[in-house]
Image 1: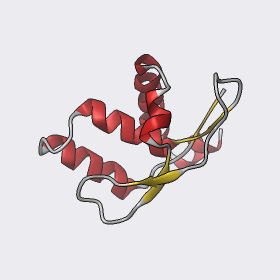
Image 2: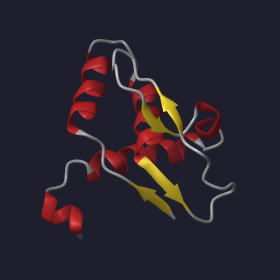
Image 3: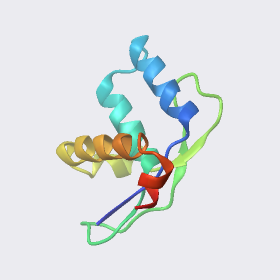
Length: 99
């Protein structure tokens, strides 16, 4: 069971900009989204770790998220699916988010 969270609108906009400008590629963006958007899990192959400061390119504010080492233990197909789900829930309206 994956616990997914909301991302700030400025963070989503920033990720879109750095991808569009070619500063990171879409796969790197997916890893950032998962690092910041996954808030916990149950029944996975290892326990949810302590969060680390994540530094996004050209984003001046460190954000707590999963480390690169932790992300490396999660299969790529799961990273892809999680990033899509996190992006989807961040596009929901407030009433939809409450459901």
